[in-house]
Image (cartoon, rainbow, N blue to C red; front, side):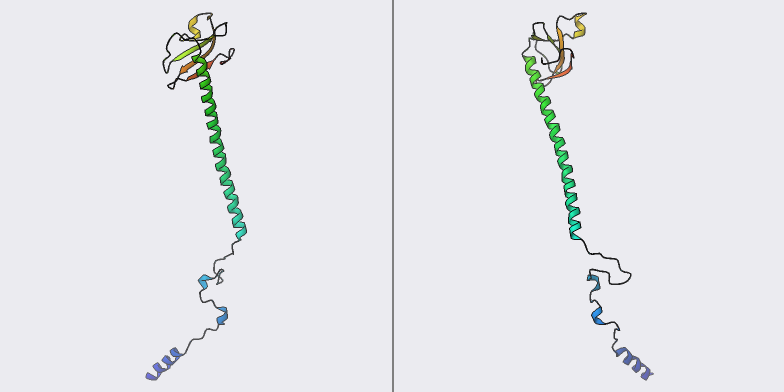
Length: 162
């Protein structure tokens, strides 16, 4: 039995030799840029030009979208500025009219034009004058908290501001 163990030890001690050529074996196959076994995942090299092209196209698309949003905001701000300028112009015209009372914030008033072209501000609506008002109705206005006037409605036959 001792002889059998001795033979087995000799077989174990015999160095195992890999039948594959060492030149064709990778020491660290996990670091290879391609699959190293038949069943391995397909690894394709990156086309850096195509990747950069897609990234640049995405960048342009995103910046164009953001620029469009900024343009919309600018347009909205410009529209608000025009409305504010119009309110100032209307307010200046109303303050140049004849008014025999102190207007209150948040109340509606009525702007009329006399036959002479002079404007007056009144608390009386066109419906309250009766059949024929003595003046031409121009606009219904409301005094805002900043002492500017908001035009609520106008007479289409006699446009406001003329």
